[in-house]
Image 1: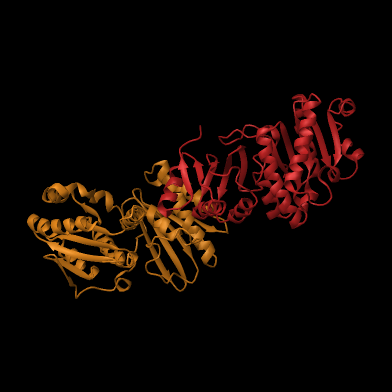
Image 2: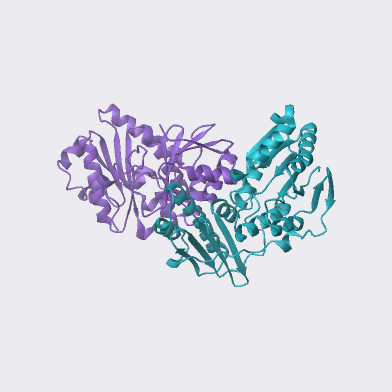
Length: 282
Length: 306
């Protein structure tokens, strides 16, 4: 199955404005490659510096981009960079915050060089092969998502379904606001400095992944966490209790932004602590 | 009545009898600092309000038609009142609760069961509930059941043990929901509850439901389906039956069955993990019945008035 086309994704935001942090789970490398080319081409049009990151050799990776008009010129002027994964992310799992800091530095450099920002397409398959890598990288995916919500940085993350088991892919995909459909039943992403959004369905099937995701996400602020759930199609009581435990563990209140009467009713019927609701997002 | 439930029946035959017994009961409660509630028909609320005079404003009056919508919802409402009075520092509750028994034999049996279940559900709460039974209006069988579902009677300000009282575990029984009309749809669950929600959305139009009600039924059926998947062996099935005015969702499994006759009637502890699915479904359904044997459990959830 090819990953969902970027043009289809932009605009499928479920009520919340989302930034371009796209998960592209692919079965054929060429599906990812053509999506990445489209994503980077759009970035070039927008005046962004773009980077194509992968494994193998720089030469082979550059070959994959031949469809892009004026490729040599773009490379010569540093508008397009081709990088090896190990150079961009390191061989050992990096601390998630350090990886985000690296991209923040790179984004600042792009801005200083006169670009509108930085856009990256990276095949990150090999970064999540071990469970240690997976955990660090899932945390990183969330932190970079939070960074992207407010900075001129955007990314497409490619993952080869054939090399990653389903649960691991779900753990990674759910941290992306875009492109996680069909890979994860829900996604948890950043809206701004103190707001996260939850979209999709939380039920018996997605509950384990939801709990793993919560364990990898620290609340963005010290006090209340606003959770926008206008795109949450279903949540059962176990899902809300998981949020309640999360709030309790972090000593915060979760304020659910939603018009949904059923979520309010469920909180009332069970007297679930640490969660309140506030009608509709502004 | 320090830390346990007191649940008395009062059979009365006139307005004066009602007021003479219950106005002093309410006044004693006010004097003791209890939170005092009167849940009754509008005319009986007015009678008491008159009789309480200047103390009338220290009592909360609730319309019985609103309070007694379904047994499970009434238990849920009691649970919220108990929690909020505990939060306000008046943990002792004194209630005059005049049950609306409805008109059909099924409704009578359901509310009699409710009266019995109450003894068990709130056994550990500091509440004194007196349930007035109007001998002028209620069928004899309903009044007779009052003595089987209340450990004591309340007369002349004093309490006497009811010799006919039946232990709730012995009184509570399943009150089968008949399957209406035709089988509309049946599905087998395969680890996911999503097909159960899709079934509800496809079949909801069989009866008149608001979009919010459809979402409530999606949740209720989904919670039942989750239980069937988690606690039982496959196959778990969901079926929908309808006859135009009534819709029944049936969730069946082949598990070891439910031993607890009060399953889903007890407010779950918010901090405990899981185990609240039946409570939620009972709160949302118009009726819900469990038929459990060693070979499996069938839960029927009724939407509409059957």
